[in-house]
Structure formats: C-alpha cells, structure tokens
Length: 393
Image: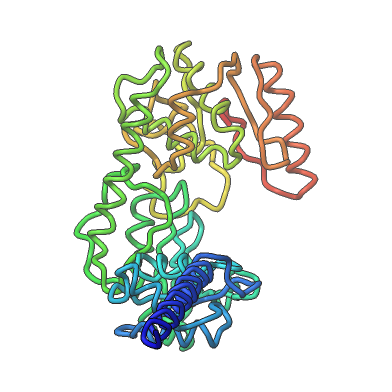
C-alpha cells in the first residue's frame, strides 16, 4: 500500500514536472518569436570569429533581446548557432530573437555602422563617410572630401580599415565611361587597374556594394552585364514602330534623353520629341551630342556652345548630321532606357528650358520661338550667358 502511494505521488509529481516543462518550453518559444524589447532600431555588430555566447551577451547588454539564454537556445534549436556571419546589421525596433538570428546568419553587406561610399558624379566625385545613428535608424554624414583636390582625411583612412565597414561605389546616371574609370581610382579600398575605357553607354549607373580589395575591372564587368540585361529587357518590351533598328541605337537615344533632362516625369516626353523628329526626317539638334564631340566625355563644358562649334560638322554634331550620332554620349540609367523604349505619344517637336528645372514643349517652330524668348529673358534676369537656341533643347 505504501509503495503504491509512493508510486502514485511520484507519477503525479512527474506529470506536474512535465506540464511545467512544457509550459516553460512554450513560454520560451513565445519569447523567441515575439517582438523584442528595444523600442528603437539597433546596430548589431558581429565581430570576425565571434561566438554565439558573445553575441547574445552583446544583444542583452544593448537591450535588444530579453533573455540571452533563450536567444542561444533558439539559435541552437534552429541549427544556426555555428552560422554567424561577421558584419554590422541594423535591427528594426522590436525585432524578435528569431528575426535577429535569421539576419546575422544570412550575412550579406553590412546595413549599419560605418559606410564609405565613392560617389562618381557628372561634375565631381566625392568620398563620403557616414555612420548609422541607431536611435533614428538613419545614416549621418560624418565627412566628405573631393579626391581630385584633397588628400584623404585620417578619420576616413581609419574608418576604411574597419573590417565591418560597408564599402560602396555609387555611379550617377549620365556619367561617361571615362568618368567612371577615373572615379574608380578614388576607391582606395579596391585593387587592380582597368586596361581600357569601356564602350560608352555600356555601364549601368547604380550603387554597388564591394568587398575590400575587390578588383576594379571585375566591378566594371558587373556594370556591363547589368546594363546589357537592362537594355535587353527594355528592348524586348519596347513599343513597335520606333525609329531604332537595334538595341544599340536605342541606347544612343537613351543617353541623349538622359543628358537632356534630369526630371523623371519628362523623360518619356523628351524621348517622344526625338522620336517625332526622326520619324519626320528632322535633325535632332541637341546640344549634349555637340558637347560630347568636343569633350569626348572627358570633361564638363562649363560654358555655352559657340556658333562655330554648332556649325562645324563632326560625327556628334546633330545640327549638321542626320539621325543619331555613332555612339552613346553617356551611360543612361534604367529609367532613361525604359522611357526611350516606351516614349510618350505626342506631337511635340521642340523643347527648351523653362527656368524651373524642366522644359517647355512646343509643336510648332513659332511656339518654340516664344518659349525660347521667355527662356532668354530668364537668362538675362539671372545674369547668365545665353545658350544656343537649339531645336531639341
């Protein structure tokens, strides 16, 4: 009888323990998957070779996770305890332990901490150092310098040496291939040389994450393959009846559209003007092509075009030649390429700057001349030298 009571009590106790254990497991699972305690974004840094224990302690100290033991147990249960990828990762407010484990084991470019970007622009290049403010989840610019006129600041050199710094190259729409090659020289965290300047228009403007020591020529090849894919996709989806016989001709037109307007909503309308002119056998008469014939894409022409330059016949002077120039005049972005393949339907044949950053469009020469006269008044009021009254400007 006594042994029967002992056995019954033991069984009851075991059931209670099992119920408690099941409850503890269920509670831990909820803790692992439910929103975390941090009300602000947090930058989590995983050092090279860091252990899960060290990372969990850091997360606990930062107030990002509520329980380091549950974090480690959850990662181990998911089979990810040995999959940590070093880097800096921005965690959203109230990120769960499950989300954090998924992020720091997936790897990829750092999304917070120190970021160094080489910006290649039409008029200038710059190297920019930014750091993430975890309280706002936004990057704050710490310093910026022009590599063409200034030596690299010591703070930037030190930041570049951080193993988890995010390194990037940002290429603006409308830069030439020569400008890109020259700009990549400012990326001191890269290596290697580029044997020759790639074909004009063949490089995709975008922001590229790179690794320390990555070969410059390899990045150029990536830009080429990306631009080729963008061009082919746009060509495959183009409208029928356009005056381009090949994707290469469309790329030439896209580069002209890119250089003519920086207003996103205008690209397809500008493209329609040039399409209409080609369809009617009119010359394009656009300044950017003439400028490219003068500079060969190696500099910016900081003055108006001279009458002698407009009347001189060159392969790129669309006042003097019929149709398109022989090559693109810059590297157009995706939006300009797509606008060229699907231009707006219009009967516009002319456009000129309107003083607001955009353009005034006209159907007839008389309308265009009125728009040009208004633009001349704006230039005079600003004290600017007047530019050539081109048909496609």
